[in-house]
Length: 373
Image (cartoon, one colour):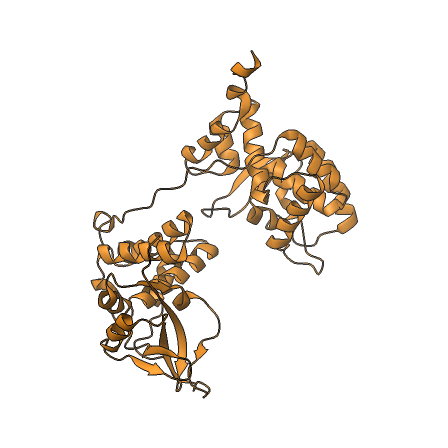
């Protein structure tokens, strides 16, 4: 394990101005270095060094400390109250010219490309982080190497997931490639390898246990709808009563991932239960509504699954998506082709659907274990 000291950066307020706090354990070498950085000052009030936000450049700080210390930038990205370095309340002021915000053209291009509201929210948030990190540098001048180093720093100090790594890279690439119209090859940013993790799948017996222990009619319908249609949580809460096509025994999914519509299969058992549910609850807009009406809460769906798994004595870490994974795996075990499963699940690529071949037992289950001989 390295004995290299760590420097903690965080946001703060000093005499009404935004600053960056620089904290580390007492170290004469680090003190010598921080004194030599242009614009740094010592605060007796908070016992830390600081530099105004307009003068702060994380790249300059990293260059100054080089291999002498690690720099933790987590505090710069954490939302919440800024630390008060002086006793005075921060004065309200207009945004400075150096305070970067996402360009309106970036947001407009996302909307023009018909990206989903959730994707727009994620991209703009991550691109704002990117602009803040390179505050003072024209985004046009930022190099591919600098972008890679930025992502690596987030991995190292914030331990972001592979999925978030790719989303952040895509948000940056969107600006350069879609907005500025640059060639994709020039911004062919090195992607982190995805973890090869298999989905959590329940056997049919455990699925039945989940339904049996769930006595609340609405909760049982929610669990059965997710499983029997292979739905994502967001797809479930957006369902409306007219999306249940009892004539063709199909469920219509509108505006799913990738802003696509599709149909999935409807179970006869579920249809009977939904008719009973409809008579009792009389939903107005959405198929499943909260206590006060309106869209059902995503976190409530999560809680329903967790509580059902606990009651059923299932020790696996089960989420609503585990029911979708189980549905797909059980279809494959029944002999349904990957192509049909891909269509039902709404996957863009067949490679995404192929992961279920690694957890299905219709092939590997036929192999006799040598221990049994």
